[in-house]
Length: 485
Image (cartoon, rainbow, N blue to C red; front, side, top):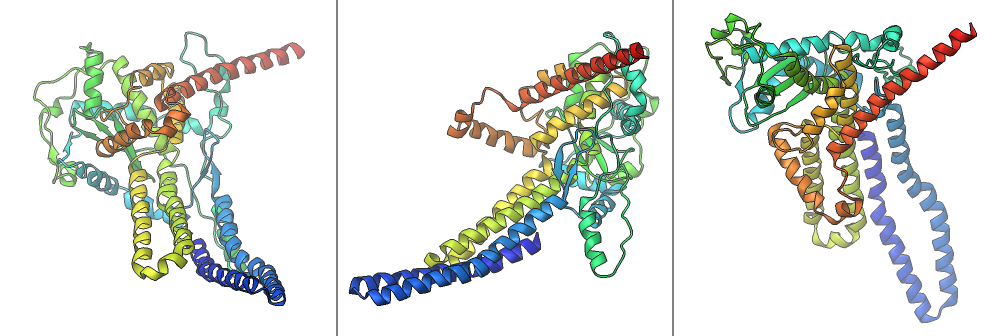
């Protein structure tokens, strides 16, 4: 992207010169025509045609095409298939950049990064300690989902079990056309070609499937009923943050708890450990002394649906995709767009000195910074739908009924600050902007009768119907093969 911006700026440097040169030639042509000097008019036109053919096509247009070609070659070299869904996506980060991100978030790095995000909410975050029954509940549910991630790499071996599912059984997904495997590194081919052209043979860069264990934080925030995922990499480089408001909603929705089980007695004693050392600057919520019964399977199923959704973001490395688009692609495009505008209006703004051009450059940088900040905390709509689809696989393999996820997301259709798919602070900003956008003419023209959350539910229903259709087709083919044999 740096090469593209440099090449584009070199080309745009000559744009004002070409524009002003053409303007001068046209001015001379009008002056010659006003004098009635046909010989001079023909001479100027001949000169303009020769200049247009030789200089513009070869030099000017060549410079403009060069960054475009480099841009699309970069895009093609960075395209890859998303595991499990097969969606084409773009990740521009190099292997070294990915490893740097992973190493920064590994171990305690993830907790420090998430702590900084939570601190930006304004109030000091209140962290639920690991001895609290709520943390133990979330951790055990997350571990149950984590244990089935290896199955996503070998779903083809589960075909017999998948076909045996009856109408009263939990439906299992058909084997994915793109199983969870090490992500392809299309950019590595470009890197290897560059190394080989210099006479060096680079070793292949390993890139394994990033799996559990994932990091976890439960934040005592009753006014926030959601969770969010963050990070990338092994050794806890990715993890999930759950807000207690969501747990409170589940308990109030299904108030009947299982009296046969109770939380461990250790929850009544505050602990001083790596947890308290890490979050020493935060407020730690000490659990009550009285033991509380553990939640039922029905309540755990609701918790698993949200955790599976956030876990899918981590499995699919959506964090890298968001960084690529928010930190590289769109800032680069905005920068090039700003340069084009500055070059086009330079003949008119040069009389005002450098202040106008500097102001335009500042606007471009500010817009790029705001866009990067927005994409850092929130995922795109495509990623949200994709996480819903993949979470259904996790739920099914972990023994939860994925059909309950349809009802779960239908009940959460009305997005607000408590349930939005971002951290609470940025959720408030985004929802406010979305409400303003819905009142605009383009939104009314496109139609606002099909909200985004409704689309998510419909996509999830389509995925579950696809499972059933695939199962029926596979059974029919199997029956035909048995009859033929």
